Every structure is written in C-alpha cells, then in structure tokens.
Length: 304
Length: 304
Image (tube, rainbow over all chains, first blue to last red; front, side, top):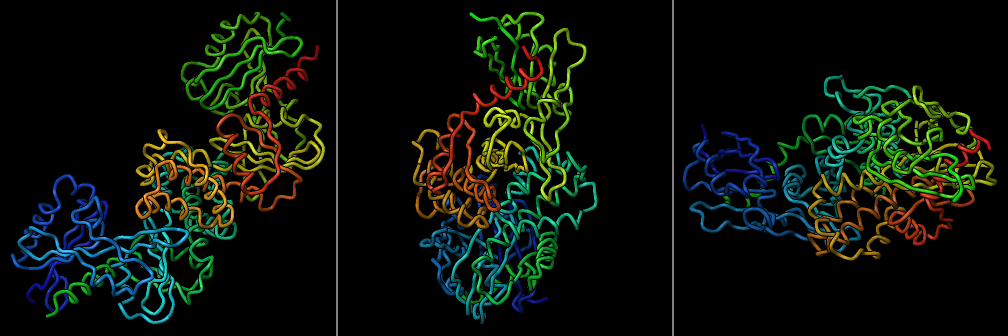
C-alpha cells in the first residue's frame, strides 16, 4: 500500500466526508458521518476531525485540506469568498490555515457574486466545480449541481462568470411537509415512482414557469378531482420545481452545453428532466468531483 | 330594530364568521372565531353553530346559509362542486340541506375545473365572487382573491370561464418558517415594512418568473453580502411570491380589468404590487363581498 499524502474533507452543513489520500492519488480510507457544520459547531470542529483522523490512523504530521461550510462565518474558521468573475484556480490560493492545530489544516474559500442584480454565494460547490472541470477548462459551460440549494455556474475558459442558487431541494421538502400538499404526497415512498407524471410536470413548468405555484397546487386538485396517486402528486412537486429551476437557469444561457455534477437519485432525476426537455448534457459524478477538487488544492498547496 | 331574516356563515378551514341579517339586509349581530373546519370536525359542526346562534339570540326557526369548507368532504355535509364553465348564479341552486337539524341549514357548493390542463377547486371564494360581481355582471374580468391559496377567476358576462389557485400565502409561510430563509427574516415583525424592497421584488419576479426560486434565495445572499435587514428579506419573499403569482395569473389574460377582492394587510400589499406593475384594478372589500354573496343566496333560496 502506498503511503498517505494528505487528508481531504468535504464539510457541509449537515454532512462530513473524509478521505485519506495516498501518494499515488488513490483513496486509502474513507469516512462519512452526519457531523456537519450544524452539529460540529456545538461539539467542536477540532474534536470531530480528530476522531475521524484517528479512525483512519492518519499520521500526526499529515496535512488536511477542507472545503465547505466549515469555512463559513458560523463554521470553524471563516475562509472568506473569492469574488466572481474569477478563474477557478483562484480558490487554490485562497485557502486559510486553522490556527492552534498541531498539523497543517487549510480551509478553501467559497465564491461570492456581489455586484449582480442577484447576489449569490457558494461554499463547497466551487471545489466540486474545480474537480469536475479542472482549472484549465476550455469553452463555455453551464454547470448544474443539484441539491438542497442547486447551483448553476457559468464557466468560460476556466473562468467563473456568474452563478445562481435555486432553492429546489429545500422548497421540495418545505412544500411536501409543511403545506396542504403534505396530504397529497403522504404514502408516496411506498409506491413506485411515477416517471410520466414527473416528465409532464418538468415540461409544464419549463414551458410556463410563471405558473409554478399553480402547478404545485394541481398535486392536490388532481387528487381531489382525478384521484391521482401519492407518487404522482410527489412527482408533480419535484417535476414542477426542477422544471422551474432549469427554465430559470437557462433563460439567458449562451453556454454551449450543460454539465451535470450529481450522484445517485438526484443525478437520475435531472438526467430524466434534461432528456424530456431535449437538452444535451454530460454527467460527472459529484462525489468523485469534490475529491478531485480537494486533491487539486492539496497538490497546489503541498507540492511533492 | 328590524327583525332577523336569516343567518349567514362563512366557514373556512381555520375561521368561522357568522352574521345575523335583518329583513332590511342590515347586519344585526356578528361573531368571529377560530372554530374553522379543522377544529369543528373534532368538536362537531352542529354544536359549534348552535353556540354562536345562541350567542346572537337567533330565533329557533331562523334559516342559516353557509359557504366554505363546511361543505367539503371532510367537512359537515359534502356540498359538491359546480363544474366550470358555469354562470355564477349556478351556485345559488346547488345548495345542500343539512339533515337532522331542527332549522333549515343550507351549504353552498364550491367550483371545480375538471377538464383543464390544470385541474382546480375552490370552496368559499365562489360566494365571495358572487357578492363582489353580482350574478349578472357584464364584460370580462380577472378577479384576484389573495390568501393562503390565492384564487384568480376569469369571469365573462356573469359566467366563470376558468380559475387558478396559487399557493402564495402558504408558500410564504413554509419558506419563512421551514427553510434557511427563516434566519434571514427573523425579527422582521419588529421592523418597519420595507416598501422599496417589496416593490423591487414584485417587479423582478413579474419580469422573470422563471427565476423565482433564485430570487427567494437572494433574501439570504443579500443579507450575507450586503447586510440587508430582516424586513427587507421578508419583503423580498412576499414580493417574489406575489410577483410570480401575478405573472402566472395574467400571462394568458384577455380580461379588460382586474378586480381585487381583499381586506386589510393583503389588500394593501396587492394594491402596492398592481401599482408598481402599472396594472389597473378596482378594489372590493372581501368581508363585505362574502356577506353579500351569502345574502344573494339566502334571498334566492328563501324569497320574502
């Protein structure tokens, strides 16, 4: 087995992921837990990290590269933001050291869009983006990173020109749980997913995004008047919100193609949406992308 | 004092309102409570009504006309729906009698839109609409009834051609309380309302409705990057959702004018939104409208 070179950590709001990376770039060990920023802010970031480092038997002098919400103001150490427009490589030089630690721990900055009509921020996705595209990508791309807060980033020849956050995942949760539509979707998990209802909802919202909050309500009215299933109602909610997101993200787009950076269920849903809308895309695995981005940062900061 | 002629009740999901109406049409007494359908379904509709009738000393043989969710399947007695397109006056003949009561109690039906691409239902607003327009209105109108579930109804020469529900009020609550934006709006109630932020958000969402879920997020990013106040963040949420609603409601509109049926704070907000969008409108008080609609039904069912 190759010797470990550094530790890479993706520390989000509600999740913690750690990889022990070897000198040849291979993954020697991995840890995943729910000790995200929210939980670690109470129990202590240093202690959470130390327990996972011990679990993978990381040598004492091994450096650690971190991205995500650990660098937020309410996180471990504030790592600030790189203002866009900016080259992707700018995040490599913006890492902040965590003081008072025996080992070298650096947290990568986020990206901020201050001057636009729609101010925006990201933290963690910039590293995923770096891993997905590399620091010297050519051409113009619209990169879609779906999630609780979906990010759409416009990149041109390795430079981020702007980005937008869509609250798709969080709206889906809030609407499913805390509105009258909760009755309509109750029990959906026990039914097979309704692909046709999802695709119809994506198309309807993409074609007429102004009707979004009316289309959401048809999950209930469709159940009252036409007896649609809970799975169909749930598919209408997710399809409407994803169709709205794609319509908004692409309305001014001049990019040549879409790059989808996602994993698992979200990747499948967005692929289905792009296909029904006849939008060409390339898919990149999100987990692999964030690890590649952290590795690019580690290799820039601690060259062999 | 004139003798009482009938009792009018607007029985919604979470509210109960009762008026004792005199032979000359005047309001002799009024009751308001939180004993809406949700609460009355547990304690009993008959008992709730009886207690309020006793409080206003309604004579034993006085008839009662009811509109709203008391007529829903999960209400007192299901009063069904009148299918649109239909003349407004059709609800007058669709009232259902409550069996087993010593006095004559009738519940008015709702409206259903079964065949459209967007199925829809309303219950209670049809009576408000009847009161606002009368049963023989001329010309084409778009009637806006804002609320938890805003209703936009297209009426042409007294006939309802179609309608749409927008979940504006409920989305505002869910987003304000159950997403990351809860932090951004915390404390807004203690600050003066930010009219400029509201108007900018209405205009932005009306112009670019596809960006709705991105514009919502700027309540947070605006606070992180530009330190906007909680009141400004809250104004962005309500302005974005109201601008989205108006864009959706009017995108196919061929009506000659907007009639706003609302009261209090919602009336003020929608008037402000229509003004900033340069949309001509006429305002009608919602409380007076529902009472007039109930009176029209009572006078049709129990002519003097």
